[in-house]
Length: 85
Image: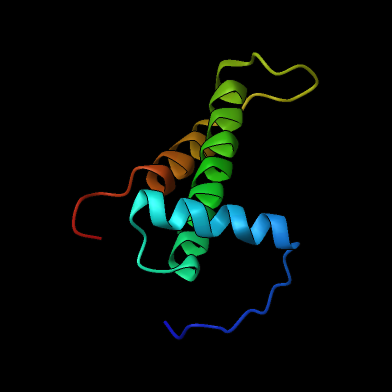
């Protein structure tokens, strides 16, 4: 997969904080710290989405319909792919 270039402007104080974290936590550069932070934010969001789906499976989310067996199986295949795929 090819990488895309993204330009971001930060307030000086936010950049200073990012530089400090980069040094303290041993990241090789501020860019690497930012990539790590974005990966973690994406991972956390996907986890929240999966938890919501699991709650739907249990019927604990109000105003939602229960998933069919086919929908549950499709979700399980996507969330927990067999090893080697």
